[in-house]
Length: 422
Ligand SMILES: [Zn+2]
Image 1 (cartoon, rainbow, N blue to C red):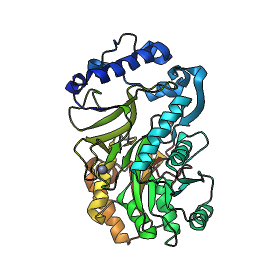
Image 2 (image 1 turned 135 degrees about the vertical axis):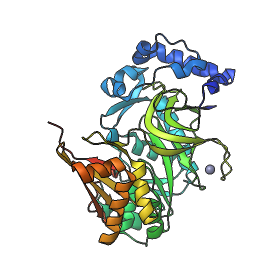
Image 3 (image 1 turned 30 degrees about the vertical axis):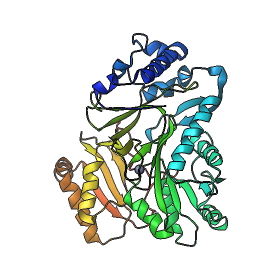
Image 4 (image 1 turned 90 degrees about the vertical axis):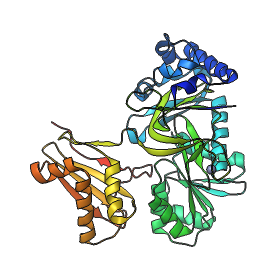
C-alpha cells in the first residue's frame, strides 16, 4: 500500500524504506523499459529523496510521441485518447494488468461516491476512444450495479425517456450536461445521485439537480491519463484520494519546486503501469491538499480543485485576466456564481469579450454586473473606456441558448473564437 502526498522538500526524505524501495525500483523500471525515460532520466539516479529534481513529463511529449511512453508494447490491449479542453490529443496504452488496476481504483472512487450493488446507472460520458465510459461500466459491473451505457450519442429526449422508463437512480455525466437535463425535465424521475466529472462543479450545478430531481451531486476527480483517483464524500468538503499506487506532489506553479504549502500545481506519478508509464505528470490543475481527517470519518487525504493552471485569458493588448476577479465581480452583484461562460471574438484591432451568465434579470442587473466586472479589473476598464481596443458585453440568459457546449457535454469557461492575428 502506498499513497504519498508531498508538499515540502523534506517530505521526500521522510518516506519509509519499504515505500522508497518500491518507488526507486519503479523509476529503474521506467528508465530501463520506457524509451522516453531512458533518454530523460539518464542523468537521474533512482533516489527518491531527490525525486523533486527529476524533470516533469510534458504533455506535448506525450502527444507527439505516445509510443515512446509505453513499457511493454507487445502486451498492450487497449488504446484510448485524451485531449479535449487543452487541445492536442494524447494516446494512452494499457496492458491487461493496467486495465484491471484502473478498474479496481475507479470502483473504489465510485463506491466512495455512494454507488452500491443494485443501482441503475445511466452513463452519459464518452465511450469510443475515451477510457472514461469503458472504465465506469467495468467498475459498475464490479460493484454489482446495472449500467445503461448511453454515452454521448443519445438525444436529450431519449436520455430522459430512458431515465424515466427504467427508473435509473444514478447518472454519471458532466455537471453541465446534468444541469442541462435538469433544466428540461422537472420531477417524475427516480434519480438520487448524480456522479460528475470532467469540469469543476459549481453551486449552480448542485442547485439545479436538487431543485429539479431532489438529487445530490457527487464529484469524482481524474483524467484520461491517470484514470479516476478521488471522490467527493457526503461531507462535500474536497475529494478523497483512493489510489494506493499514486504519488501526489504539490508544486509551486512558477518554480516547479515543492510548494512548501498546501496549495499548488498537482503533479502525479502512477507507479504500477506497464503500458503507458507517466512519472511526474502535471494534469494542469491547481489544487489544495487537506490531510486532516474528514467529517465523514475517512482519514484519506483530500484534494480541492482551485483552478486550471492555464485558465488565463490573454488579450491582444497584452492584458492577462484570470477568472477569479470575474467570479468575484459576479458574486458581489448576484450573491453567488451561476453558470457562466466568457466568449472571445474579433481580432487584434477590436476584441469582443462577452460574459454570458445563466440567469434571468433586468437590464439594470446586467449593467451592475458589467460595472462590477470592469471595476474589478482596472486595466481592463481602462482598455474598455479609453483606448477602446476591447468591447465588453454581459448577457443574462436563463436558458442555455447563448452558451457554447462541447460535443462531450462540457461547458468550457472560456470559448475563444478570435481570428488569429495577421
Ligand atoms: Zn469525507
